[in-house]
Length: 188
Image (cartoon, rainbow, N blue to C red; front, top):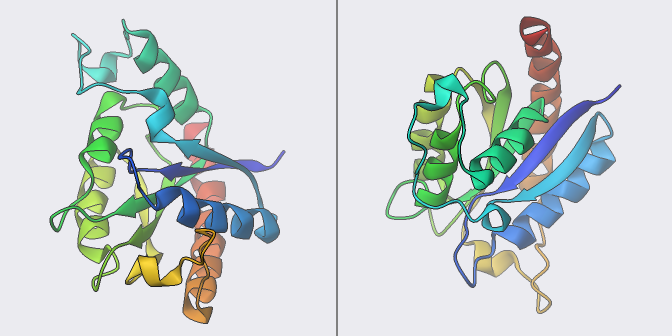
């Protein structure tokens, strides 16, 4: 049985480019062939600012949106967060989604496909890694950073990667697969 990889679109704002970048990486992951791949859009979960009355470590979720999100997160063995940079940090939608659940994230690897302006979302990815380690996740060193993302979108909004994006994506998937295999033994 293949390991399950979720590629999570982290921006929820109207006009976002995350879906275009995520569609490209989804195709890369399918070609890679080591994972069963799902594309997950945070916007479809409509998570309000964290509203559960009890700590997520207890897993006593009261709201349907939390139960749905917990089931989605729990179903994966590994994640790739397709994330923009907002004011040198992660989008609030991602931090909120990370904080909604706890045990469902534990002992799973995570990669970053970050995008933005000149920094390519690297500052956001760095801050996100701090949160991931607190959730007992293993963030990958390998990553894809897309500088000036709008210059890589064609007239149909399809992401057109450079060679270094493809090479970085392949390295990320290779490493993610190794860690996903190893960490699955901890969760068993």
